[in-house]
Every structure is written in structure tokens, then in C-alpha cells.
Image (cartoon, rainbow, N blue to C red; front, side, top):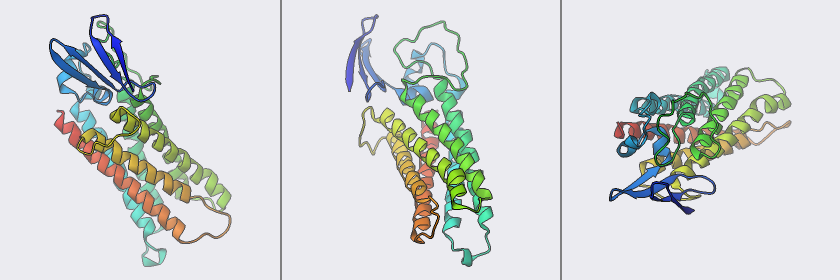
Length: 284
């Protein structure tokens, strides 16, 4: 949806974004057409328009910071991929205990949470997405922030909460309780919560980059990142649904399909993390 706004300076600004979100600003200044994107703005990726922010460029918008977030996400995704592969190996095929596999998953959840918070910290401290932000204001550092009208802030916040849910899910699975009811309560429930939050986060990131509810831009690097992450979120959601532990026996293919989707989801996040690292280098 595109809206038009007349800035006090006389600039005619076109504002785009799905629903209540403003994700793309475009205007002409001094004969130059300027397009400002919300995702690039909060991550400090737009080299051409950083001068429009009078507060300057803080460390959390540096190329090194963005690269580090991608690298930490990649570590977590790799460990989830490893845990998924180990889960697919029949117990009779080797001596790798299920306990160790569950510890690999828990180890993977830690970098997920660290990177998730670092990404949210960046969004919480991004300057306002607007033309000519007020000058002379002291930059205050926020640990969480509150920007519910920002798709980027909502996306990173829900993702961070999802990573915390996965901490509980994977930790409780290390020494799983014997009963199906307890496993569903302490392992499956936080898995479902985390997966649902990831799916919400992934779609918010997608519409922030697309500037609408759906788009197809396979040649755009930012779109590639959010799209492959969204696919990973969908796969995680399928894995979580299938991971429910029934009171009685279940077909053997259900846990296998759940772990395959977990592997595919982690692979999506791994690819997205590598593309994020590439994006940060291109903007340095």
C-alpha cells in the first residue's frame, strides 16, 4: 500500500508498506531520487543515505556487527543440522547416545539466542525511520525498546522470544521425562511456541523487505535472505507439529519426517546466515 505525505520541508514523500508498517520511503531532493528502505536503515546497510542520520553510525550498525550476527546464527543452525542428522540415524546403527544428540541441539540453541538478541538490540536502537530525524537528541541505548509500529522491531523481538523457547525445549529434552504427557508439556509445548514465534518473525521480516504481503524478487539479496529464512521457519513449524508425543504408539515415519523438516529448517537458517554475512561484507 502506497501513501503520500507532504513533509514540512516541502518534500513529497511516498510511503510504502503492508498494513500499518512503513517499510519504504521515496522522495526527490536536490534533483536526486532517494529511496530509503526500513531493513537497510535499521541494519546500517545503506551506505548512500547514512548521512541523512544526524546521530551518525553506532557500532551496532557496523559491518562487523552484522557479520558477527550472521556468523553466530550460522553456528547455531549448523549444530541444529548436526543434531537432526544424528536423530535420523537408527539407534541400532551406532553407539551415539540420544543424550549426546539432545546436547547438540541445546548447544545450538545458545548461539541462536545470542544472535537473536544481538539482532533485536540493533532494531531496538535504530533511529526513527523518517526523513530528517530530529537533530540534537541524545542517543539512548535500549535493551529491548518498544517500537510496535516497526515490522523490523516486531520481527526481531518475536524471533528472540522464540529462541528463548527453544532453550527450554532443548534443555528439557536432554533428560526427557518418561511419560508422554510430561514430554508434551515440557518439550513439545515450548517447541511449538518457539516455532510459532519464528514463523511470525520470519513473515514480518519478509513483508518488511517486500513492502507488501507477498513478492517475488529472487535476484535481490535482502529478499533471498528473508525468503530462505521464512522457508526455514515453515519447516520448523511442520517439525514441531509432528513432534507431539502421543500416549500410545505412532507410525515410525512421523518422527523421521519431523527430523527431516528440522534439518531442512536449520539448513534454511544456515543459508540465510551465510547470505547475511555476504550482505554485511558488501555494505562495508
